[in-house]
Length: 149
Figure 1 (tube, rainbow, N blue to C red):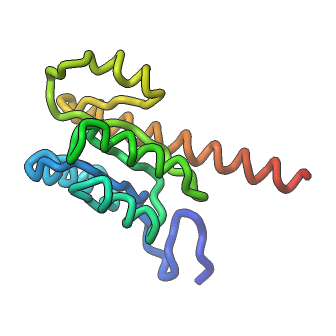
Figure 2 (figure 1 turned 45 degrees about the horizontal axis):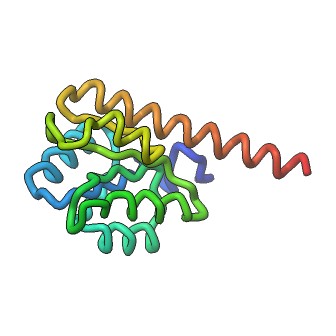
């Protein structure tokens, strides 16, 4: 059977791959469970270093990371590395905490990052789907530009 973008070698549906990075085991497991229930294949990392190793060995449609992990800006390191990858995953900061010292929207804007708050699960899954869809559109547009040149 021929492999298409939506199906694997045996005709089974390939799930979009998401890398979830959060040092809080409870948040990580909860978000991983929600994302997997939403139809995504999720790899989870507990640190920026682990996330970078996973990005180097696999390809992801989306990288979701907490900002503060082993250092206050470890999540920014994850986002920067993801944006350097040839496969260009969509990226976003995710927070499971309602209150942070720096207002979340201002922090996300300052770092040019999409911020997803996980309190509203349907909104979370909708935003994840939107980010993956936008990435797919950008890839198709890039491929079309390359074929024209």
